Image (cartoon, rainbow, N blue to C red; front, side):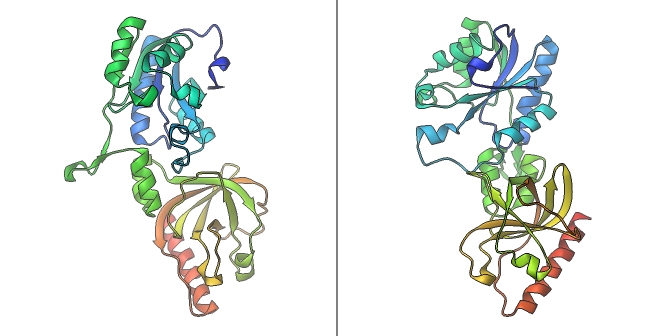
Length: 312
């Protein structure tokens, strides 16, 4: 899969393509449906499928300081899109100048002059251009002028029978923030993942017999609510069952919020300086401060037992 950063990276001889545009944070099941239709349409026409996304998140430029928690960094999104069959990902640097493009200017600058769009595939709520003035109707109207058609894909709805809400990054962020990682996994189609480099912490886990990987998470990462979780520590492609702690470590009056993963029954792991991932499967309990160290150790042993049971 080709990865371009900026319009200037697109090959000059690039031909027609099928395109979808969006932030696509998380590449959740709603996104997967749109991207899947994009790939299907591209295969029908015999042209490449292209995803256009943005960095930083548009809200950070339009409303500085409002950057939402991110469900996946760009390299992870690209990996997931490649698995769906996408041929190229274009990351557009979202600047204040870029944000002022009208819908028509955006279409000409990106879809017509550079990507030579044959079909554009979007969800029904797609907005684009200055002040989000463009809609899918605007996109279709411009397509009649610039020789592309528009496919609109309806999104999945969570809990539809009970008046549910569409699968979205906003919904997923809320579930993650609440610690409902099982609910987030339902929307994502996979466990929520947090990534970062393993750094040295207080090393209390090692002293207690439960050495943990202290993960320095990437900026703006969507981190689950404080608590203990079952999941996996992913190191260089290997997924290891793990009991995961998120929080300030109240047992030792900590103040800094951390993500720490204990790889169950793995001895002698040397992880400092490695980029790792932590996948969250299930919430076990909230953070607690125990009366004695023995109570803490007993609870940690139970957390490991429950994790093993949940992971099978």
